[in-house]
Image (cartoon, rainbow, N blue to C red):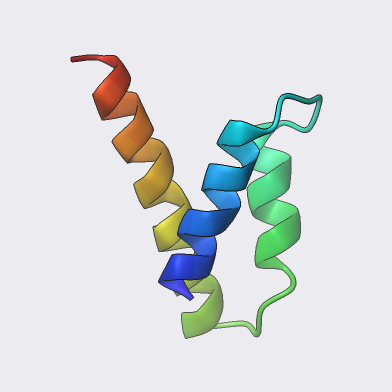
Length: 58
């Protein structure tokens, strides 16, 4: 699930568009079973965004 979150965030980062980041996270997270799966997806998603932000600030 973590890898799925990373992939989803990367897809969002690589696709110019109108979909806000928070919307992509919230809507995709709903597609996973409640509990650990959603938490792992969210962790992967936010990890990828954090990696990008840290890379941009260096």
